[in-house]
Image 1 (tube, helix red, strand yellow):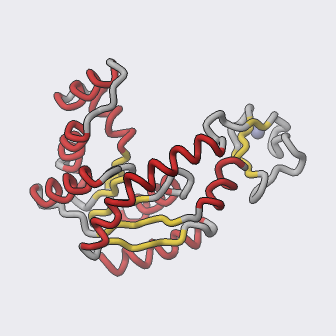
Image 2 (image 1 turned 180 degrees about the horizontal axis):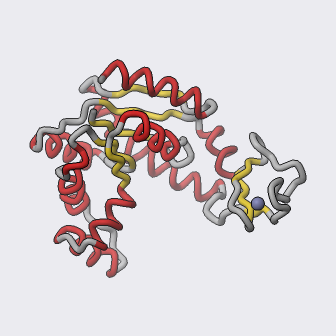
Length: 216
Ligand SMILES: [Zn+2]
């Protein structure tokens, strides 16, 4: 089964991806990992991407597209793939659709994690991490027993510098502006399943499981 998973940062995409891969035996392709692997393996397209990155430039869509094609062509996707973090815009959506068809591994289902902006604000700005053990808390939904102190080891809790509403707003607007168009594109093809991600992870996964079992 060939799956795309979409959702803004903080929607729980990573958690759901890990679970989908475990339950459905598909290859997890996250763009971050894919770039790191292509660069460290020194593939031609990896080296090309690296030259842009070394120059402090954005990797053009066309290079990313070829890297995705190279990646989904590998043997470990014979039972399917889960693409996470791609496509990010309409141009990449067109690209994945045609490339995946071309190699006989067409996109079959798009999981769209939906979450209201206000819920994301709480998830992101409420997040606190332990300096000692890395445990993750949330001051709204999963607070430590004593404010600012880790329950497990008494370590000091801190907020990551990226976890501010200002940075969240930038990332979120970028997501809506760019990625929404690709969701609409796949929606017209009848591939999109909207999932309410503003719920506990087990409930979100339960709905995803039903969707994927029906598609399988
Ligand atoms: Zn701790």
